[in-house]
Image (cartoon, rainbow, N blue to C red; front, side, top):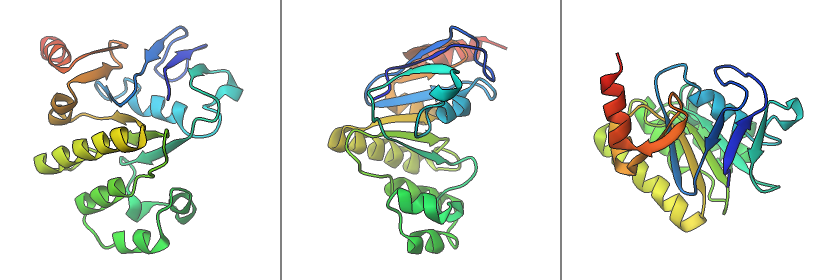
Amino acid sequence: MVKSVEFLKDWRCFKKGDKIELKPGINLLTGDQGCGKSSLLLMLKNDGFLLNDKIAVVDAPSGTISFYLDFEKGSIRTMDINAADHMGISTGSVLANMFCSHGESVNTTLRSMPKKSGAVMLNDEPDMALSIRSIRKLHQLFTKHVEEYQQQIIVSCHNPYLMELVGEVCSLEHRRTMPYFEFKNLMEEEK
């Protein structure tokens, strides 16, 4: 589980000293475009968390495994065969998804999330192009992975319904975690 990320120097939109706290379970990273959601997920992406570059200190147990899915750029249907194989997704699934709609492929990709106990699942905008019913199923899937596999789910998102279902968000604009209703009020006040 990733407990926090503290930046040692300026990187993209983050400043030296910025610290993002994360919790067990589902963490929703949210805020306007350009506030660092995707950048933070990239920071947490597998193998070393960029520690060799001394950009940030990631507080996570040694050997923490993370899996990264980038829905801004695609889903199973656009996934590299080797990346899919690493996640336990068959070549047949990748090929079959080439002929699905975007929404169908997103749902299939999410159902194919690795079931590795204790893993950190990084999802970049899985809510993109999903219906309200699919958002509810997405929340149920994340909850199942947290309960059954003790996984930590870290998601960048813009969907207010998903935020409402989770009840709490990590606003990267405000650099803190808060109840969804507080985030909603702040965003409605700011122009």
